[in-house]
Length: 188
Image (cartoon, rainbow, N blue to C red):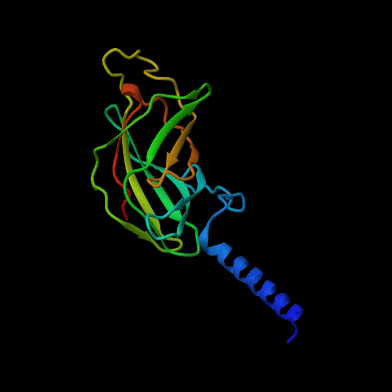
């Protein structure tokens, strides 16, 4: 084989290997091909890509907020994190929450107080993980009566890895007591 042909085969082989590996090693963060979805019990969804802890795999999450029962000055909902990627990934810990309104970020305090506590959650493709949430709808001492806080329009959710926030509409009114949420760790 002539040197010129050898170089050509090596160049083609390297290009093919780089192309094959590019789908495994990183994520561009572009989730535009995955449209937000809504179902009858889930008002909105937002895609998110999250690197898994230690595995190198990426969790591609579709995030929904499922309303819970609200009574006696307390609201509740469950965050559903559905893995829409093609390989298994791992999540562990607590998400970060941030309320946002017309004028930007609103007071938000997510306290890690609800069971269950943190454990490793392995998500196969199309599997889901959950996070329990509760908040107060009654004004705390020193807060105005109505509304107790500015009304949020969006909830930003950041998975424990700190990658790619998902933004979903917030339609549950003001979160009183300075935007105080009680949340669980991610679980199945």
